[in-house]
Image 1 (tube, rainbow, N blue to C red):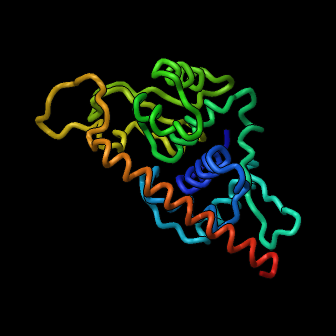
Image 2 (tube, helix red, strand yellow):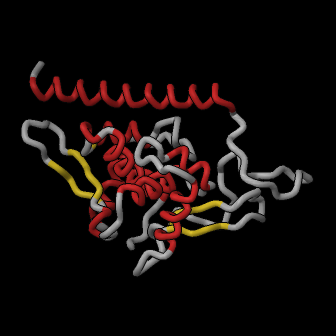
Image 3 (cartoon, rainbow, N blue to C red):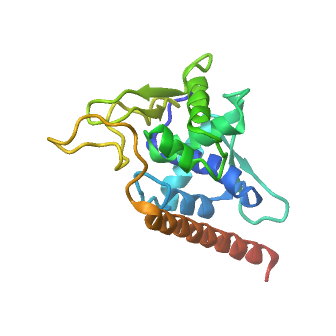
Length: 228
C-alpha cells in the first residue's frame, strides 16, 4: 500500500466518511473537502488546512492512485473521489467504516470505534467490531490495522491503522479516555467516555452544524453553476 502523509490520511478519511454518511453530496469539491478536513468534531487532531494544502494532498493521492478527479456534467468545478477499493478488494462497508474513523481520529478503543462508526455502519456489539478489526489485522497481503496492548500510557488496548505506515505509531492514543496521569490508578476495564450524555449530544449537534455548513457550500456552488 502506498505511503501516505498525515494530510493525505485526513483527506482519504474524509472521502471515505462522506461517501458513507452523505452519499448525495459525494464526490466532494475542493471546498467541501477542505471543510470536511477542518471539522472540529470527529477529528483528532483538529487542523486548519488551507485549500492549497488539501489540493496538494489530493494531487498526491491521485499520483498514488488512491483518489481520482471526477468531472460531473453541468458542474463548474471538478470533484474528488477515493479509489481505495482498487488496493483493498473484498473489504465491506464495515471495514471501510473502521478504516475511516482510524484515519480521522488515530488510535481508539473498541468502545470508541463502535460509537464513532455508527453513522457509517452500525455494529450490533463490541464483538462484531473486534471481529472486523481482526480481519483488518490479518488482511492479505499486508495488515491494515494493529492492536496496541494496555501499558505505556494506555489504560486499555487500542487499535490503529497501518495504511501506508505513515499515520500510525506506538505513541499513546490521543483520546482522553485512555490515558493515565502520573501516579494514577492501575489498569482498569474499559469504561464509557466520561463526558456524559450532554457532551455527546452537543458533539453530535456540532457535527450536524458542520454538515449543514458543507451542504450550504454545495448548494451555493450549484446555484453558481446554474447561473442563479
